[in-house]
Image 1 (cartoon, one colour):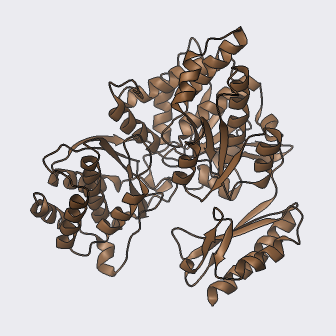
Image 2 (cartoon, rainbow, N blue to C red):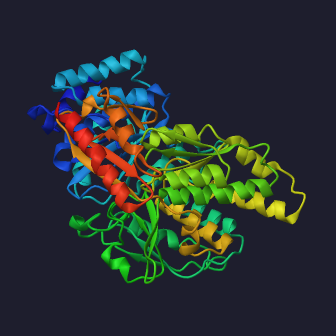
Image 3 (spheres, rainbow, N blue to C red):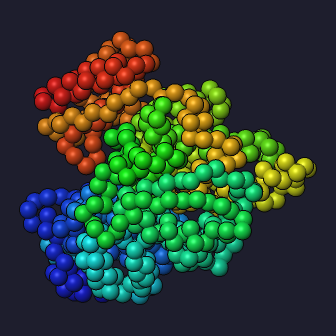
Length: 543
């Protein structure tokens, strides 16, 4: 085929190191992610697939993001973004895995041709890819490999250089909808800032944001991007006092080091630099797609508002607005969670908010797909990654409903502004932060007020090393083990011994280990239940 010789020649300059040592790769929720020095050839091959994907979809623009999110600075990753800013279609994840695991340059060209033949791809048709990267130094080499693949396949491309992951998702959707009635926004980083700043001001409706917000940016790309965004807020309409900390991108070794959303969630404590800020505080992760709020209170200690809390806050506020707008009979609102969601949050949403909750397997692609089935679908993983999706019918209702009172008009205006403020493509720490600030301003709530909506059940997450993680297979949205046979029954027997007990085990997606999650009425019981289930899993893993 037309590109084979140029692919082989270009591929020889970007070898896949790990394959030479017998290591295989698998495309997952995070794309391919590993030590950066193993990724050059992988990124080249992902470029080939992105080109094929664009041509298979009639020349629509495909995105590629180079980031390792909350991982240490020595890691990196590469993933593909589909035309509407969503994750790569699952069938193509398998193709990505096959292509990247080609063992020779010649077999790589053959696999490329096989995919092209399967989808009847015309190599004379146009293809376009846009890409960005986070602040990791290894990004330089990886974008060079990516560009080489795009050049070898005659693909038009645009390098947007350093971006947050959500900004790249925004740009992909904005590019593909430009000039259509579904236009998502101006195709530029500036367009992203303008859209959010305008929607933020409109959603606040003149409400006052109380006090200073301290934002920990994990010494990642979110730091400079947040600072840039703040310049676009209309100062005559909105007073937003933000203190940006952990925004050092000049020392790559401190990226995500003892700071950021993942640190706060897993360690359940504030980064050192934010402890002295008694005010409202939140943390982004390294690529700014996760958000955790928290406060260190002299009386109550550490208060954490994670993804579950953000989800319930958004569902409560938007649900009330839909009722005030007179649309509760027309629009279905629902919440999507994973098995890691705290049981108290699920109970609060179903019993107090009276909204349906659907549990899916772990991984944003699963939550996003189910959330899209509602008119308003709220989804957040407990780690702080999530968003709110609004259907076309919902947005049309916000725009076209004729208000019968000032209160109804206010509700419709705020709902429309929120649909533009909240990033519809992917979890976005900056966008989600603005949403939280809008809701707290309207409710006139402090973080303590927010924290009193329900009390989290004490919980514990344990990592258990096993011989072969692949023998552990799950069902019921990963909440129960189907294999090894008999193990789930043993877990059930332990859970019955504890008040409000719940526990599950699932294989890690990246390590030869299992994750055990347990919760119970007291901290000591949650710890005890976690230890008992971990022992069951460890014994099963040794057989």
